[in-house]
Length: 488
Image (cartoon, rainbow, N blue to C red; front, side, top):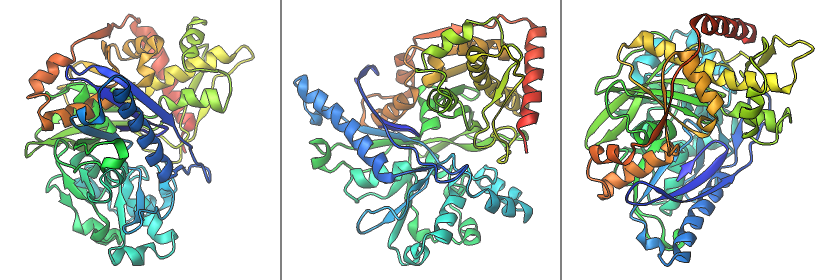
């Protein structure tokens, strides 16, 4: 089950790791105010269940049945906050999405109190509205009665994985995994526990928190009436960590970049967390067999979402597939740069007040130039993160890519050119769902080892850089100037 920011997907995999069937449903995006982003938790649940039921029905149609599903793995949009009534399962309000910037002032006050190092040392994260902690505080401060009821043990909190697990198991399991816990800004990534000092500082009662379990492990079984069988839930990981696992980045220095709604680059740093000096986050890659692996992460808030914006808001394209042809219909960017800072800038800037700009426009700047600038912006933002990562560690290996926008050949070639590094794209770009399946399959015995998973994922295409150094420098300098124009 791959529960994303704009859609819920279910993917059936066979024992060779091949996709057998996919079902996907988009759901409503809610924007109550500028910079605020919400989802209806029931929309998330219903679309995810609908996609899962499609998989079960597909099996029935080909003469199998839902009982032949060995296990379910869950991967999800991270940091998004859902709180609900423990007795009824009713959400107390809409989910506050990871993109939402409503807690920027709270984060600013925490920074002004000199707490940045305090949070960083415990959680590996910067103080930012991106993470779950201040979203939870906002609900307590703004939704009447929730804090009082939480202290009485009547309210549960979860990131999206926890919400799905709780509903799939009929309310029997209130749990998350190490990766999702590490993105809340409440979890100590060194002691592997919810941090009591942080909870006290923010006024968050521990009664609402889920149990933290290994990413490949036992999360209960589904209620039989949901999918026609009691299916074990055996894997759980936040989407970016799942993609890292799905790309088989098992060695220290292995890197993957996911081009989804946002863009997320993770490097496996092994058994020890690495403290970044360049605005990268230190996070948990996964927890398996009693051991935790760590990662460095760079976050781009708007990546593939810029293409959706071109389609739905600017209305200059009808489909994402058009963008590659439009981009190559002009010889260069015509001096046009697009910084899609719709909800601020992430790594390495961490500027929540930055806003989107298109600059360098002339009378001849038609839609092809704007579309090309949008695609190039995805690559520039990734390059900013890669540079920060290279400065933090010298062990960066090949870069593997996945996510919807990685299907765009123009974007992938430009990414290789602007980085002056080869880009590896697997034939199966479903790395996030694949990672969830791998985690579940390892626990239930479908696959015996990570070495076996490596053999499953060997087909790929390589994009090799071909741009001259002076052109690369000129383009990168133009991007830097555009970013300065977008900042607060």
